[in-house]
Amino acid sequence: MLPVVALVGRPNVGKSTLFNRLTRTRDALVADFPGLTRDRKYGQANYDGYQFIVVDTGGIHGDEEGIDEEMAKQSLLAVEEADVVLFMVDARDGVTVGDQAIATHLRKQDKKVYLVCNKIDGIDATSAMADFYSLSLGELYGIAAAHGRGVEQLLTTCFKPL
Ligand code: GDP
Ligand code: MG
Image (cartoon, rainbow, N blue to C red; front, side, top):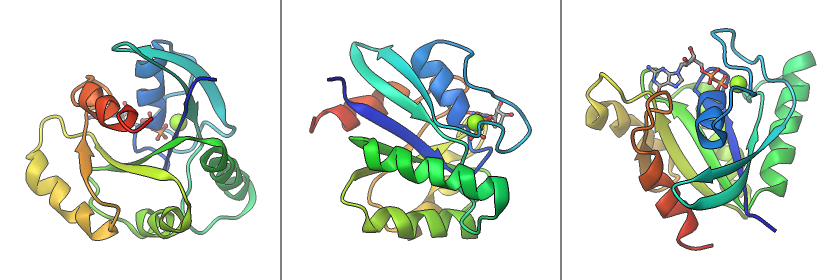
């Protein structure tokens, strides 16, 4: 069995962009429309020698209703079945109420969670990321999913304990 890596986080933080990079496809729906990926989507990744299943999710806001509620349910199911959870946040947005709600949920899970700060391209990454230590999820990993920066280091860290 290949390890399963779930990508969770608010809509628009770059989950599908990372999914596509890891699986080298354009299968996941990437768009400027937040929350377009409504179901869990699975792909097989072979990245820098690491082989795993990656799960893209529609995203969680933290206060769900209707379709959003279904998306959140899918995200929580993805967390349950994962060996590793990559909790993605947007470096440009700073910590949002939604991020805090997701962090609270993830801290209660008995899962290995890595806090991934995306979109660090073209900004002062160190100062943009400092805010996110308040989520109390330990070490932060800065990446630019759109360009691949930081992704190899992130995977090396994630797969070390597996
Ligand atoms: P999702 O809703 O979490 O799946 O987010 P998407 O992958 O659909 O990305 C949302 C938006 O963020 C799109 O416009 C992406 O092009 C953009 N985006 C994703 N990753 C990066 C990144 O590393 N840097 C920048 N600047 N934009 C990104
Ligand atoms: Mg998406």
